[in-house]
Image (spheres, one colour):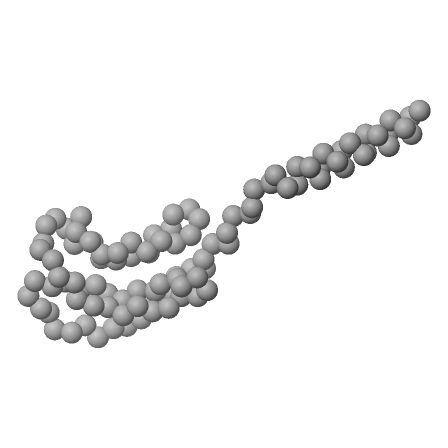
Length: 100
């Protein structure tokens, strides 16, 4: 009798485990690695009405690739915030340069 109860309990637990295994959410994606240090860039002479956006690393889904700096046009309003990487708790996110 006791063997029967143990066998049925084990079978029920096994069946419950198999049934719920398919309902488990997928594991979270592996976060990107740390962003490499910035590369040195030669900044061209200033241009009226343009603001320099320094180069930055970009995650292409497999590894980081360097995106060179460039001039950005625009009218000043507020404070210029340079592009930067920010950790969002799960992975790094590129925040483009903008007026704040």
